[in-house]
Image 1: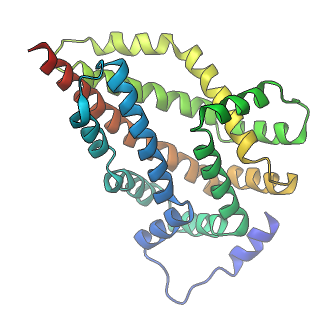
Image 2 (image 1 turned 120 degrees about the vertical axis):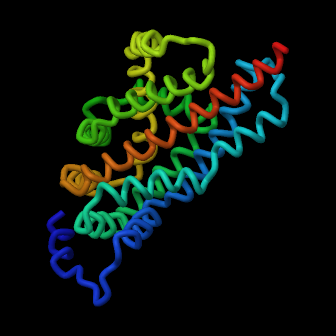
Length: 266
């Protein structure tokens, strides 16, 4: 981080970027478009699961087409752009760009994307979870991954986002049915312990897989950036934007399922 701080001193442009240009540049460094492609692929799988579990395959291709429209790439990107534009200062954007455009920053992003794709394979996911459950808790990689997860509050943030998304799905599913939303939220919160354990297992399995190629020095630099005000701001913006995105998506998914169920009852 001393090297990064030194470079920041000389980070001067003859033509300063506007805020929206900075946001575009940062989101490009974070490979947001590639992330959205992965999320849309996962959405397709979710749609097929909803088709089988909620709809008894009655939705057909019309329902799956609707799911694809719900996972609209432009709308998904807009959620992230607006939050980053509204929450990060110009200085924070400059510092985040510097970090994520660096060799380490691009390595981190690429490793995470590759691991996310890999875990879509159930066999690899099972192997990653076994690796986590049997991992040596005193090994350097495990301790550094553990520190990274806690520094970024990843378990609690992901649990909150997961509960919020599920809440909005069932809100959409129960439109017009008189569902008591307070009772719904209570039921979801009662399952929080189970959600937390599932989230913990997934996060450790994911990062132990993704960050395995990194050296201890690279991991420590990654953690050091996460502790900075800029690192915290980026982390907060990511969670806030994806929370808004998935709340909207899951509400619409609930509505789409409800429409099919309503039609099948006629």
